[in-house]
Length: 313
Image (cartoon, rainbow, N blue to C red):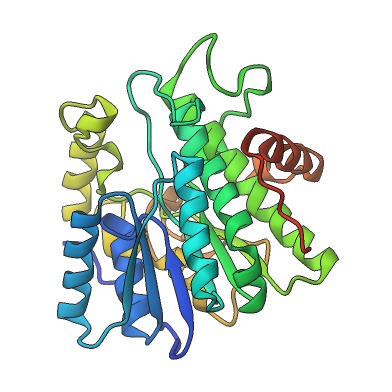
């Protein structure tokens, strides 16, 4: 049986938190813990019926929880803009943003609504545009932004000559690219904030390995059945072998987003063997994320591709 691992989440009463990918898996556990700590939680969801079920589940566990559901499809810049309009019209400051949503290794190359390779477009460009839309509210809340990367960001590289994988496609390599770019953006966001006095702090988390829906059967990704990998992960997780559980995998992001001891531009992940499972702790920044020059290039290219301009004006 897996060993019970937990952290203390401080009171978040009076604070507003936005969690992408919060309708299932690790994101749902993160959203539930934030609600239990008193946060007003915004769940941007692609599937509203699934979101309603998630919100009802949170309220069952946390009576009186403040949950707001809004439509958001991170693979569509128009949807991101509409979500941003709704949030800015509401006007309340955002104190925590946990960029957790993602897609992983569709077997065949797929495109977003705007023509980007699905993983790069959703995992990185979608969140880049989202931060641009929410920047005034993040500044008003002096927010902490925690972005969920992956151990996949510790391998591979950015495919600069073919960001959309038009010439060739590898689901695993495209996934690594999306998480490297996403991680570099998150670090560059903190540098921009520090230099321009936005009051935002930005850091990184990764969940290790745990049985979630990322590698499970996903008809919308043309994955008709669970992968062998996810079946093995479920088996190991149930026996407490190496990997984590969905509950323990949520803890690094929770720690990075809420702990007064979590540092800006730091990476938090599981402390166990291979950083696959275990209690959350600060970890050495992956080598692929250390180049400030490449991070600046990621920022510039992302602005060009999305049309988003993340400025303090």
